[in-house]
Length: 421
Figure 1 (tube, rainbow, N blue to C red):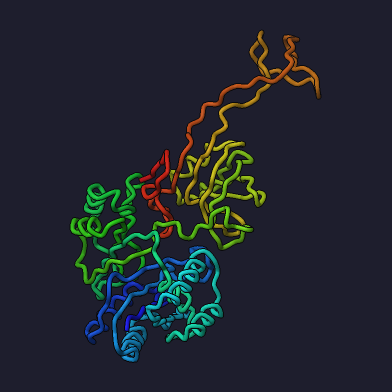
Figure 2 (cartoon, rainbow, N blue to C red):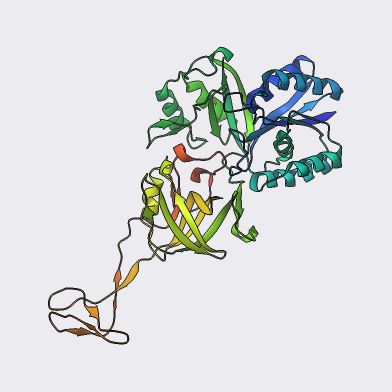
């Protein structure tokens, strides 16, 4: 019997990682004679929800077994031993789903909603009841939502990530890495791998900072290049490795404008509109501006962590036609990417006095322009070209600010890409 095992919400800010726990479960199942088929899946869920887990990722993998009961016992034992059950916000859930097309087709729609929308426990329990899916819950069991979604992920667009794990005795200690080796790996295998480092900001972005078991993660479009890149890396001793199929770097979370009926907080969108006024920069380096959309006025933001991306935003002016990509929180769209469709390149000004060169003043409505000093007169405003420091095309936040789900421009088949690397 082929069976999908999905799990979520096993970690906490204090440690653990659902991907690592899944690897441990797969190892125990294989010791018991259960066949694990193919790569496991790592699906990142809606990045805006307030009750998300640390990495907001759920995991599933396919097994072949004649004994459901044994599989459930082994997974339960692994969860009980290694998950962060003592933490108040850790509420694991595990599902065991038959490899049946009808069930998986329904779960694929559930998975898309879990990435783009807010899904309740009642909806997850209804799905479990509808298909009589064996499952395990711990405490509140919120992990059932992600567990079902990870099984339902179809992967029409997908990427790979190789995760390397630390020796257990090193958990919580500072990671020992040779940064130069990560830059070298990126130099050799980009663009088949990406977001390993950030050259402009001189940072290694593929190494986490928390107490979890992950040493590093290499993302890319093919596992051969990822494996070759990992061979270059110089780090502390690696305990385990696992390649995952993921929805990272796919923009799966973004709702296209034509599919949106309204704008709601805790959702992510692609929207077009005109810039209403020149952007403003506030203390801390955050940049804000408004655009008009078919849903009305929308406030957009490029926060300080987006670094040089903000320099592009500050150069926008009233009337520029743009498309924004980002997540809506507190009625503000946090930008992940930007397409400049067209720029304002001309502007009307009061005419200059032909004698002194100063701008003339309007004499009133439907009246000519006059120079108070020279007494010269002009009938209408003049149009002058504006020199712009930016150009049409796509811009993105740098790797240090990239979300798991955000698709880097190197993966997008679009013209005029301005890649921050």
